[in-house]
Image (cartoon, rainbow, N blue to C red; front, side):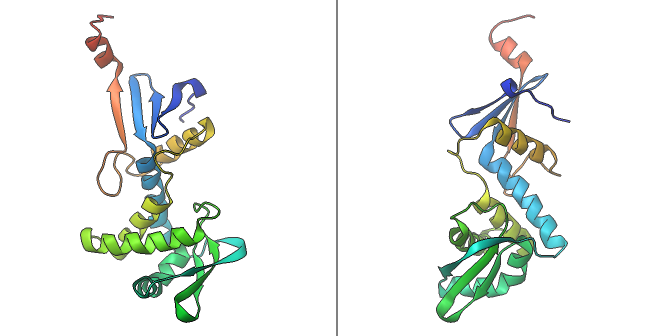
Length: 194
């Protein structure tokens, strides 16, 4: 549907993706866009429970604080449905055996801790259901960052996934994902009549 040639997509400052369209250009915030994609994906996973974990070759252990441990126990089923296959051991140590495929290699422990941390924050500032807040936490913490260089196939995939979203225009917090600039606005600014 969006067969966009490579020359029509580029990245600015490893933060924004520019896409030329018939009407002008669309500027996409790469982090917010990926956050939206992962948020909707997480909501789907939580709505149709089953574990979709990517097994780790070697387990990873992570020490959780007492507060994180309480949240981990509370959210254990939801975390499993998202793909975090993890068990609690003695003394607040959690062993991770599998993670969602959106988690980068080497960031398994950090990802789990950050989701719990983000979830705790959202519970105090977002008047939303626990499912919505864990989905938003998942999106926020596993999305590509501003500053991550992307190649054309990654940008193309991001754009395709974004346009497949139910609400591609805004992130879970209501910030805009993309801004459109019409060609006629450029023409007007440069005093062009045609």
